[in-house]
Amino acid sequence: MSLFKRKSKDTGNDVYAFISGNTIPITEVNDPVFSAKTLGDGLAIIPSGELICAPCAGTISMVAEGSNHAVGMTLANGAEILIHVGLDTVSLNGKGFKILVKEGQKVKPGTKLLKFDKSFIESKGFDTACVFVLTNCEDFPDVRFFTGQDVVQNETVICSF
Image (cartoon, rainbow, N blue to C red):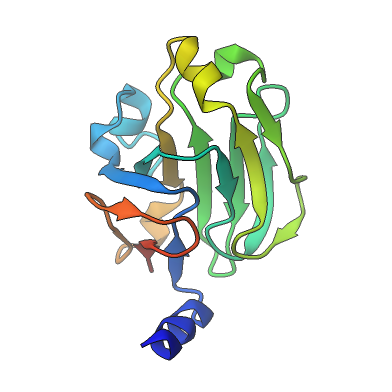
């Protein structure tokens, strides 16, 4: 069984949980930009941890300079993903966040991307939902997102192409 799982990881068609927690559909995210799929389709993870890791191999295409609350990646299959920590957290101006990668950097599954202080963010009254958006979802009509489950960072598939 573990051999099959390893083989599945090598296909590059699966995206793994970038943080442990519970997945919800993007339509349930408490932010109209995300819930209306304005930026693309996806899901959110209600986090149990404070470290965001690369959900698969790719290249860092964007880091939210200054606010440090989001990272973008381009995958080998051309998928463009955005990982956004918290809702309206851009207004914290980087307080409680630390980016661990640079734009243009190639990353492997599990590479540490971003750390955040969950308690600090919550103490300021912000939702800590971590949103995963496939921003070019029109290029991937068969993509599937897996929600309504507890996920383990770097182990549980959350998206499949």
